[in-house]
Length: 390
Length: 181
Image (cartoon, rainbow over all chains, first blue to last red; front, side):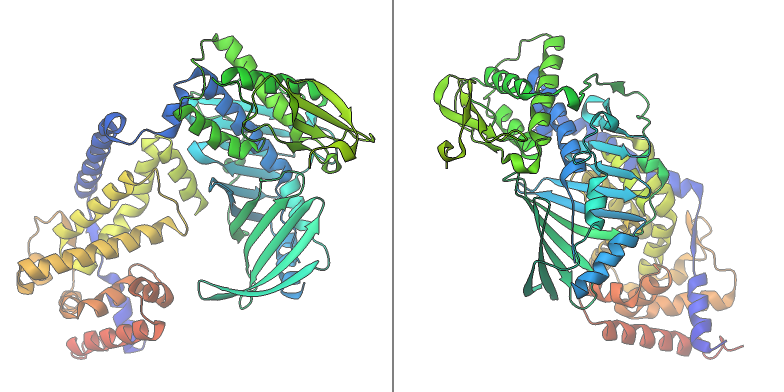
C-alpha cells in the first residue's frame, strides 16, 4: 500500500466512538429545546396562516376542499412536454425514467413537490403538509390533511372521460413532440448557459430550459391556455431516484378520520357551478364572488380573505358546512373538467351577487355554436361569440 | 434519500418519533465529524446539540434541496468554525489539544485509539492548520467530494486538493516514516 493511502486509511480509523449515555444526553437536550419551542408557539410566534383559517368553520372546510381540488387539478393538468437535439436527450431520459421527482411553483410562490413511480403512482406534497397520493393501478387517490387529521379518498375511475382521466402529468411528459416549435436561444443563469425551447401541445405552452453543458433539464415554465393565471414553473428534476412503495400507500395514517365528500364528476353540471358561486357570495360579507377559479391560488387568497375578515361569522351547522365544501368541490370540478376548446373565462372577481349586467363566467359547451354566459345575478343566457366581453 | 424526505415531512407534521429516527441515523457520524474537526469531545457534543436544536427550530421553513446528511454535515462544519474562532479568542490551542484528553477515561466521548501509532496520528492531525484538517476530515470522515468541500469553502477544487495533499504530506512527515510498513 502506498504511504498516502496508508495515511488516509489510518485517519479514517480515528473514530470517536460515542456511548449511549452521550447520545441520550444530547438527544434529551434537543427534545427539551423542542418542548420549550412547542410551549412558546401559540403566543410567541407569528399567527400561522392555517390556524387563522381553521378558526372559521366555513373557510376551514372550504380550504380542505380547495386542497383536494388543487390535487386533482395538478393530477390532471400538469404536464411537461419537452424536445430538439439537446432536447432529444432530455426527452429520452424522461421516457426511460422509472421514477421522477420535481418541484412545482405557482404564480404566487406556492410550492408543491411531485413524485412519480412506474407503473402508475404519483405523490403530491402541498403546503401545510397536505399530501395526495394517486394510484392508477387501482384508480384510487388519497389526500391526507394533517391540520385536521382527516383524509379524503377519491375514485379516479369515476372520471372516465379519456381526455380527463390521465396518468397525465407523467404521460404528457413522455409524449414529447419530435421538434420544438421554437428555439429560444440561450440565457445565462447561476453561471450556467441554458438553452431554451418552446413547445405547444394540447392547450399547454411549455418553455423548457436545458443546461447546454450537462444536457440536464433545469426548468419548465408551463402556461395553460384554458386556465389563465394558472402558470406554474417546474424545477429540481431528479430521475430514477429510489422511491419506496410506502410513499404511494393509500392507507391513511393512524388516528386520521375520513372526510366524507364524494364527488362523481360524471354527475356534475353547470348548476353545480352556479350553486357554488351563490354559496361563495353568501360566505363573503360584501356578497362578492370568488377572486379566482384557480384552486391553487384560491387556497392562498381564501386564507388572505379570512385574515382580512372578509368572510362572515360562519354560524352554519357542521353538516351545512360540509355540504358547502362539497358544493365548492363540485363547482370547481365542473370548470376544471371543461374541455380545452370550451374557452372558459372567469371574470367574477370584485363582482357582487345581484349584478344583472356583468358576465362573471362563460364557456362554450361541446358541439355548441354559442356560449353559455353566467351573470352576476346568476342568470344564464346563450350568447354568440361576437357578443362576448373582450 | 427519500426516506429522509418522509421523515422530515412526518416531523414537520409533529411526529417526534420521526425526529428521533433522524437523530439516530445521523448523530453518531455527526459527533465523529465534529470531534475530528474540533479535536475536543465536549465541544463536539455542544456543536451537534446546537445543530440539531437549530434544525428543530427551523423545521417549519426548512426545505431540503440535497441530502439531509450533507445538510447536517455542512451545519456541523459551519458551527465548528464558529467554535474554533471563539476558542482562538478565549484559550490557547495547547489547552485543548487532543493529547491531553485522551488519557481521561471519564470522557463520555472517548477517542478509541488503541495503538500508539494512531495516537500519534491524531496529535499530528490536531497540529495541522485548520483548513487542511477540515479538508482531510470532510473528505475522509464526512465522505464529501472535493467539489463539495470547495463549494463549502467558496474556493476552487484545486485549492481544496492542494490543502488535502499538503495536509496528508504533513501527517506523513509527522509520523516520521512509521506509517511505512
